[in-house]
Length: 118
Image (cartoon, rainbow, N blue to C red; front, side, top):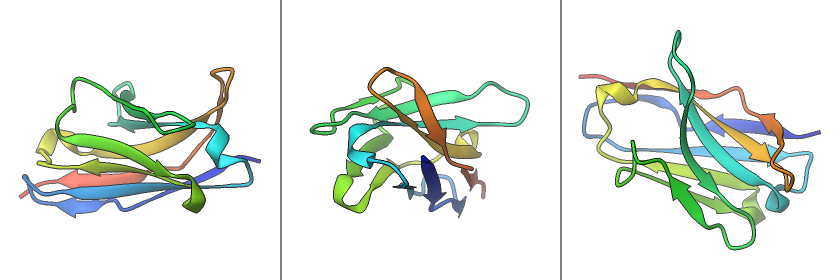
């Protein structure tokens, strides 16, 4: 059973940085693409970044490119998203999903809240 848990959220001032982690269990983590999303209540979720298998090529959404960077460490069964120069508009619930080779979402975490305010 695919289980994912996110860590690292919290409150930060504008301009600050955070590293979120997404730790998997119960499945072969290295064989799954990891996607990062965020969601604000009442709004649609926003795709942020993806980290592929086999070498971990990444793709980052234009909306956060240059400020957010995704990575993974398969030995630790953990994916990361590093976020820099955070802005109040980055306030959201951040979560990860695991996607299998067929493109199907196998699981998602509960998310971790990020709040950016002064």
